[in-house]
Each structure stands twice: as C-alpha cells, then as structure tokens.
Figure 1 (spheres, rainbow, N blue to C red):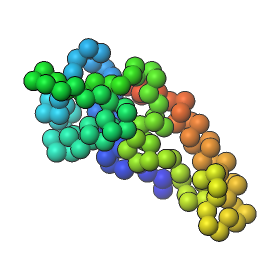
Figure 2: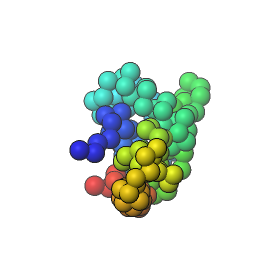
Figure 3: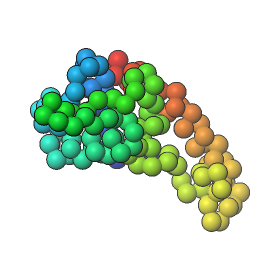
Length: 131
C-alpha cells in the first residue's frame, strides 16, 4: 500500500484550514492546534517543515505567524509532499536514472511514477480545500 506519512497528512490538513481563512490572517501554532485538534508540538513541527519547504512564510514579531507563500491555487499536492517527504518516488526504480539494478521493470515504474507526479501536480491546495 502506498501511503503518505502522518506528518504530510497533517500538513495538508493545516494548509487546507489556512487556505479557507482570510488571506491576510496570520496563523500561529497554538491557534491552529486548537482549531484542528492536532497536538501543538506536532503543529509546530509541521509548520517549520512547510516553511523550510517554501510552502509557508514565517512572519516574526508579537503579531507574527504563518501565511501561505503563494495563493492556494498555485500550490500543488506534489509540492506539499515534496516539501515534507522529498521527491515523489514510489520505488527506488522510479527515479529517472533507475535503481542500482536497472532491470527491465525500471522503465515501467518510471512511467507509473510520472503518472502519479502528474496527478499530484494537477491537484492544487485550492482544489483540496474546497471539498
């Protein structure tokens, strides 16, 4: 079974919540944790990862918080997954170079991986947060 990690899943939940709020509103970890019901340490960790990945912007100061780095319609599911987990690759064979064995199934896995990335790239945060 192919699965994203719980941290990535939480990232999608947090981002969808933020996308459905006023675009000018800054979000802090404590308020997000209370609104969504994810423990504060986990929210803080996810926000840091998403900021490092360029999905969120961090705003310092007493009125600081986090905001989307760009409009929700311009953030793709592929970008979110890559920010948290790294490049999308369903197997080691699915990279463009293939795996160390470079066997006859590598090209097939590369095709599947390309299709998965295409599907994730065609799905935006706006699509996901509008239900």
